[in-house]
Length: 212
Image 1 (spheres, rainbow, N blue to C red):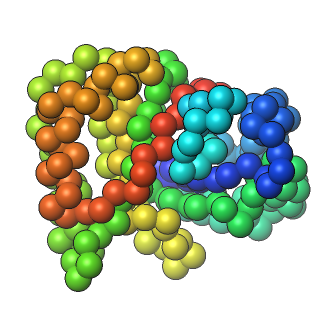
Image 2: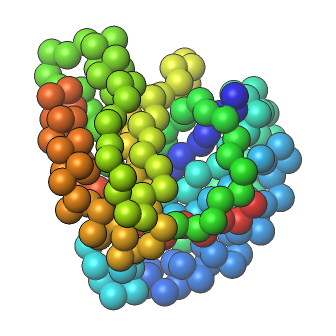
């Protein structure tokens, strides 16, 4: 198992979406790729940024490390300042939302499209009850183009204040398959069932860019 470091963010105020994507996908890709101990790196820009399609965030990034100690070493290293310095050129850092989860390091996937929900417990619900519900297997009949459904639960180190109680990711082969799939009866039923244990923020729709 490994630690997945997921961040959600907005672009720097006043920056165009085109300039944001150019810096993130060109300059910053090299900065992150040079991190010692980085195991997997996937950028997830929001769909429709150039066209002004509204999304709750401008992007999401997923990086995998061997363990929490590897992340701690990075944060204490001189290279962390280099990362932050470059982020300030295109990211609105006060908007950053962090989620740490534990999962295996995936094989480099074929790029797809995602619908990402930040999930929160219902008022008065215990963490244990929520996690039991969120961890339950979701019965799905075959949904065309659906690659995976994943619900991530946070790790609980002292330094981790997760942006949600869980993150749910629906991953499809194409944007057309995603748009059709989210209207599929089985998918709609699964989302409806989720309401019994969680509230979901407006979903973020992203296009994967697999770096390594």
